[in-house]
Image 1 (cartoon, rainbow, N blue to C red):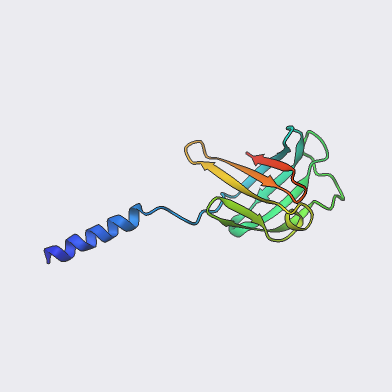
Image 2 (cartoon, rainbow, N blue to C red):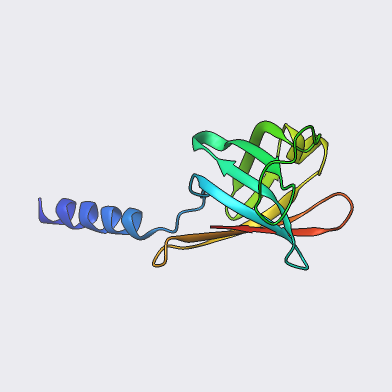
Amino acid sequence: MRPALAVLFVVSLAASSAPAFAQFPPPGVYRCSNADGSPFGTLSLFAAGDYQFSVAADASFKEKAGDPGNGKGQVSSASTSITAQSGPLSAVFHWTGTFTTDAHRQHTTFRFTGGDGKTVMCGK
């Protein structure tokens, strides 16, 4: 009986200390800026990869009405990579990127690159 308990303990310890390979960015509202720091838009990320994006009209991040970049869609995530699957982030901006989360500070930052090669940073 003791060897069986030892094996069970080792297996459970290994499983609990294994690295997590799948990670999804936390839901929230993220302000996005161009590489020069100028406002680009607001990304509202919901559970399961749903999002809403609003292009910034000005420094207040108010939505630029009628912009084709405004809309809803889905993103997918693998490890710390994120890819726009549908909606304006895919159809208009062609975004792919990465994200990092500082759990201690509860802060997530995204770095997206569009089809035109421009970089956009989003964070809380």
